[in-house]
Image 1: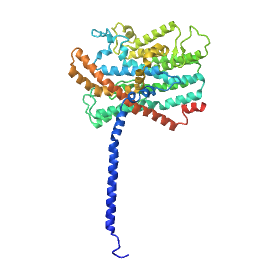
Image 2: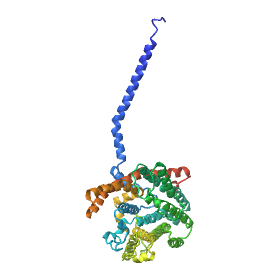
Image 3: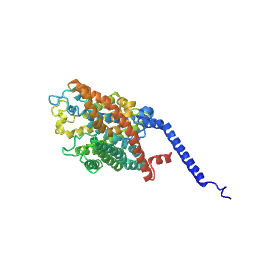
Image 4: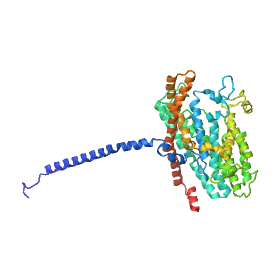
Length: 503
């Protein structure tokens, strides 16, 4: 080919480069156009994910199983226990929110010369008796954790019982501690951001990355310490209410060991051992362990009632409550039984209403205070007895279950553990600031003080519920799934696989 016919390679290369650059620019422009065109959809999806579950899925918010660490699905529905747990967590929030503004909540009606508020009366106090609700939590946990085990024991199904106990024990730490560590980490980040009040810290404490991190690591050490049986309420600055997490974990392990140890015993022997173990724990001031054992005792009684009802051919006036079809309760038959259990319920609520401050001169609690040697920690024995009596009566009387079977109660039960973990942080970071702002508007004299507190409650409560709902969906559910995934990867079979192989 001649020199005149040779193509201009330089020109051709320049055109190719220009074409590639133009094509690349067009692709980038198209990509940005697509992103910009769909940005509002991504924004809407993100905003929708922040909505409470009852807004974008009302039915699922109620029917979805809770992620409370003791929420093992029993063979029959126990929706009223879910509502009861929701009530208990709400009471804990009310107390922690109101106690700083109304320290008189610690005292009984008639104690001293300044405690004559109607809200300090027995039975009324139950709506802000936070310490008593922790006892109720423990009793419910003991009942729910042991109910399935008791059913398999009575059936003589030792293989499934072993799988159930192994599964509960394996996943217990993850179900309790993973959400608790996340909530404490949020408190640490809030402190590093300067949002946390310094009340409760040493006077000479200097906030810095090193000091704050060391303080948080010491807090984690307390949270993860399952060996110290003495319940120490000091040193829980980040999330003070989480003192109950290691207590519940230890008591759960004791319960699982106790269930295995008594699994081969006859029914009457198990009932005798349950009652004896409860008394021994009470005498040793181990009210926490006693609550879990009493929960197991109530599960034994209920399972016994169910089996007796199945084989009963003729109603008996003296028969203990019988189970109605399609429910997980023992329904009483006679008026005498209903009156007796109603009295048990009132006694239980009365004991749960025992005040935090020793009521040695209060007319309605002076005798109990004397029996407890006027010790403030002695009240926890009364809380334990009251929680067991209340749980037994609510399980046995359908009329008492009605308030706890509402949609609101069950929803609060579904987010109860998340509410318990997150409400303290929000009260300290957000609630305290809203309260100061509200009092600048209403004033602090007379009824103005109460109006400012009420305004704060109206603004803070929806935020706390929304945050608990979000924490439940983002953290709680994923922790449950993670625990199940770990169990599935680490074990050979699960309870679900055992049940499926038998169908």
